[in-house]
Image (spheres, protein in one colour):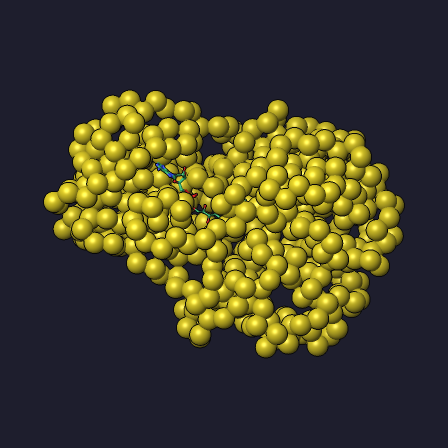
Length: 479
Ligand SMILES: Cc1cc2nc3c(=O)[nH]c(=O)nc-3n(C[C@H](O)[C@H](O)[C@H](O)COP(=O)(O)OP(=O)(O)OC[C@H]3O[C@@H](n4cnc5c(N)ncnc54)[C@H](O)[C@@H]3O)c2cc1C
């Protein structure tokens, strides 16, 4: 196994150049993808001079990992889908040592847990239960068939085919497809609420169908050493990144831009604004694309039976009981399956024992559990959003005694997910004219894939502005 990378070193914002060809503002995945491509050079291998300015003391933006007493707490529960085509182009997925999550979800219902999964990707411990539950409640056969037809249709079609029909809220699409019963309410809506940070079905059908396509084609995973490894891998290919440098102002001049920071001003022929959507709107004058908040609670508990805490999930657990809670993770927690609240009593979106899939996420003998709720816990302080309240809900959802679970870290992310409202244009312009460019998930899709694609598109537009020929698109697996 590769050695854990830990936190990237903080560099001092020394020696800002007074002038470069390109300044990239923001070292999130969009800015990193853009700077990496520029630094690799044009079609002839000629490299423009590039500097990346990042306000935070680390790269990666919204994708990252915090090390807390030997636990790897990603900055909110987040996963990389290795089916994302742009990730396969620009990332060395093998070096990330991806740890896949099982292709199954456990849904807490009034009549007990139901396990749903793709039999090809279900862990052996869950398979009998998946096959048994396939025939039981959570939607009648017609709804299940309609769902399978819709999801497989998303997976089979090329992205262009998913994008071409008129857009609409995804709730309308599901209704038209005949997915409008218990399966939708108890499984699909809670499942997607963690990915979209909404429960009203208002997100673009185009975005949701692209997501479903990825879920069916690839297994969501986390890198061995945490999500921070993604940004670190890209950053290692870019020589000039200045951390802890916040851009304060952008001034357009004739043929050049002045980028003002507390550490000095840089003049550049091209500036790529690769910040969060709100800052991008401030710097570019474009409309602000709204975002939605999420909160993730990271809990730990002992796993006396070893690092996996496997307690032989055999699918015989009782309804919402603590039966089988020997490992402290309930009957199915130790399988690493995502747990959902089919009754939707609280803002809880999902919960997962992440260390069951990614061993390096917790010290030996401990489990690390990520629980995400919609909204900001501190902005809406109720019983349901309090730590004890969340832990009580988790007792019901896992069928486990959670009184001894300890909070390791709380991540409140006010601008977590970029809103993808219909009609969604997944190729919004990146070249704003006069040497000003914009990249970020708000230009494409609210995902790692979208951020990486927007970075590539912005880099190619910069090459054209500088009178250079963009190199060919990298082949899948070339990163
Ligand atoms: C909790 C959570 C879970 C998620 N889960 C998933 C998931 O499972 N799968 C998935 O594909 N996507 C997921 N996403 C979405 C994904 O993280 C984003 O779509 C993507 O990372 C956005 O990248 P970006 O580069 O566009 O923006 P950001 O990551 O926001 O990067 C912008 C960068 O600009 C910097 N910056 C801002 N202002 C300035 C300034 N004035 N000067 C200098 N620097 C500045 C910021 O510090 C930041 O580093 C999740 C996001 C969150 C928060």
